[in-house]
Image (cartoon, rainbow over all chains, first blue to last red; front, side, top):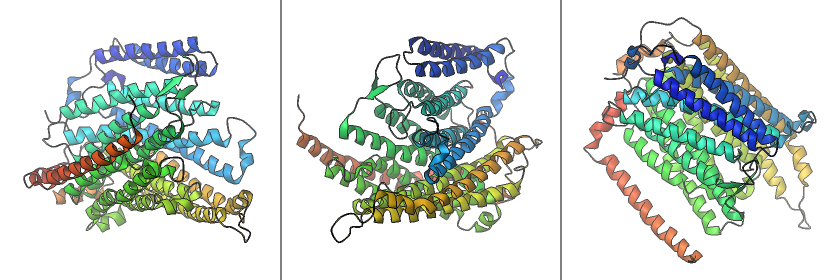
Length: 547
Length: 56
């Protein structure tokens, strides 16, 4: 793989690796508190390995010029595999934390395995590890195909992918040790945050440079969504993580914001992370892989454009609905609530557009589990955006906030929408990328589909029930005007639902393991000579009809 | 220089409204501009091609 890089790229890669290793050494040297030294060691090791890989091939000859006649797919393949590894890891952690809620003794009396440390390991593992790598990998694929241009260079995709995963490793390993700045979905401390900015700027530059090389007059809409994801996540990440470290030798930092401003900044970030990390990028996936797999153009291209601007500009204002009934000024809460309700329009535009694209191809949806993954993702997208808008209404929020009712729709979105569209896209993409006849086993794709669907349903129904019961118990008063139930009583009432939730998560995890096995086996199959993306054999015929 | 809370609220409520209205108008005009239809239709179909190599 590294031999594919030009001599200049290998040399430049070596320089970057040495710089990274040097940064790791510096952190070790400056460390006043052991913890920073551990992370410095991880960074040093990463830089050292990268230096060995690039340095070891530095005298190899220049790669074949013929490579320029095809797309650059090696980093995409790497990204898919890494993404699936994170999926299995992150979902396993999810099942563990779910079990902890039902059986708290499963921390085994260790500090690193307490709920407060494991929970961000789960969220970071699935959102940033699984979701982020999937987004980066598919964006590399979509940007090249829709532009009909090879990536601008071969070094920066590796820098982006490896650098991003270094960030994820720093984040996750930090949580185990108790390193966190206590901002949800933005837990990593200042040095990791700075590193992510560097990686992200390289990502944005690579995307723009590749688009600039495009051989198509119009930039296909999926790219707009990916670009919104990259650009807005950069802005969110930088603003929310503005902080002053205690000293350069200390992991701890203090946020530039305080009090209600801090809360507002955090939830402006938090909700837009949902919007641009967990929605915009995955809509980019949907707008490319769904029409492609169905062999039909998107139902309404115009609707996809209106939906795009609606999503990008409405979501920006919705964050304050996380702070209903707090010290935040009432009008800001109302603003967030109003925009959240308005968001239903562009969200349902996207969901409807996907479903209408499939209208008339239901036979394919029935026969092809890959397309069914995407279909179901669009359905869950519609469901969870409806619930999100509904729960942002202040009076509904009065019942739902701080209860499991929030956790339910979040997972309808995360499992039902984000994970399903990713698995669907991977099953379409993997045979195409590795030039295989189809997936190793289409039966296992079926198995994965039903495990994922049943897992999501069990999970979501458990959380709906538990959330509403919880909310009602917390607001029930007795005749003398005191609360009728203690918090402990509501905990006891939750117990069966917590068990059901863990089972739902376990089913979903089992599906992901099956998916990983299937993808892995597919990569080990024989290559077919034709460059035609055949999917599972079903689609090749259909696609040629629709042209 | 002290910025009054009231002035800030007035600014965000007034200009926020104007800029969102202008943006919406702009997006709708761009989307439904008759000349753009051909380009959109072409783009929607362009991804369905089966060739898998970059253009020179």
